[in-house]
Image (cartoon, rainbow, N blue to C red; front, side, top):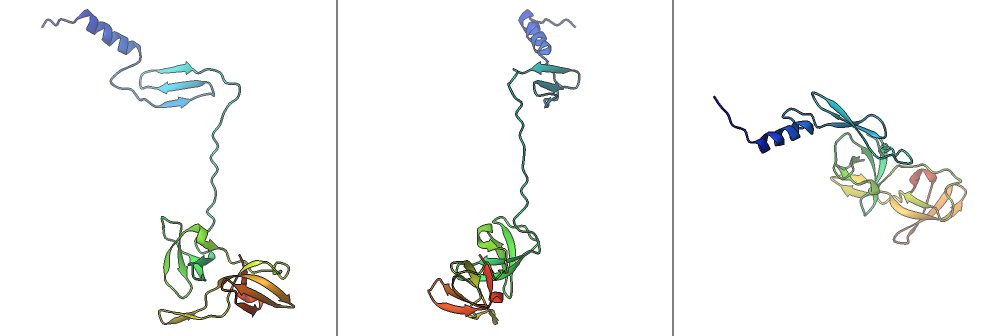
Length: 181
């Protein structure tokens, strides 16, 4: 069987094969030094020099640990009060899945969470921003729970602290009813 090939077609095929094109290539590219790029192909490897630069650049990825871990005790700001909770082991697109003490659980964004930090006597000074349990019990699902509220320390007298909540009401509390914000 006689086959006729055009001269231009044969030159085109030879040019493609000479350029490294073939039906079975692996197009992955790896760097063996800061200035050489190596193309890995099944049949051959070819090194290409890149222009020299004055310094090597390196991308460093920093992995930041999550602010909260499964089992962490947290205070949850629901907008109308702070509630004690615990980070649960469930995936959540918005942030962290938290179960509230005495309530249900939901997905909470990180900006609505704080770790409950028991204050030292030196930290509870006039002007300190705190989360205070002012003793207003609320009924949820047949249970009385005692939410905490954002407040500010307005006076200190021995082991008693006067706090003012957002509604400007003042309450006198002991340190065990207060967390730092």
